[in-house]
Length: 214
Image 1 (cartoon, rainbow, N blue to C red):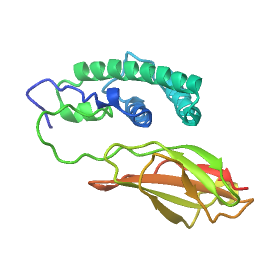
Image 2: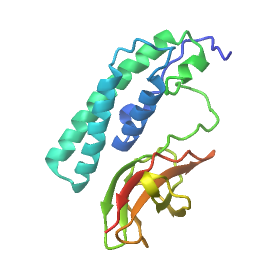
Image 3: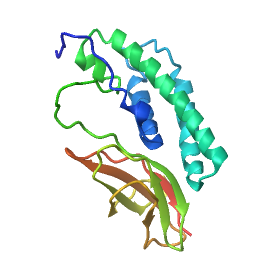
């Protein structure tokens, strides 16, 4: 059992992170706290957190056109999520019993003042799929801190919505703009996933997003 002698404090780097990073952190904490027997009485309703994160994901996409109202809505929702995450972080610190193993089940990362080994990256997410030129889809993803590159894989959706049996891959250097996935067959539905590459290698693949190509 990995118990530390001093009280564990949460790394609150998400408070100053990019919107996509706040979103990824929020979904990661939501996933880890849902059904977590170590933290059964969270001060934030996890259903409310999920609905706020879903709305925030939409707002991030809408704000990409630079509209003032869309950016303001995105920023306000981001502040709401950060407040929720801070409340959850405090709760986790109090109820983890100063046990690092229990703390880590929350999805938060501990604060450290010493040099530490590289940590696994968050799994990126596809936030939007848009039709590009004929045979092309534009994929927008969440940025992941310390990611060196991102890899997409895409393939034709099978019967009944089954995942592809074969995939093609494409690497992009960053998440600052939409990635053009081209060479697709019009009238065909594709599944697309993304993963990030960092100091420890690749993350897991994201949940698939699907869309028919025009």
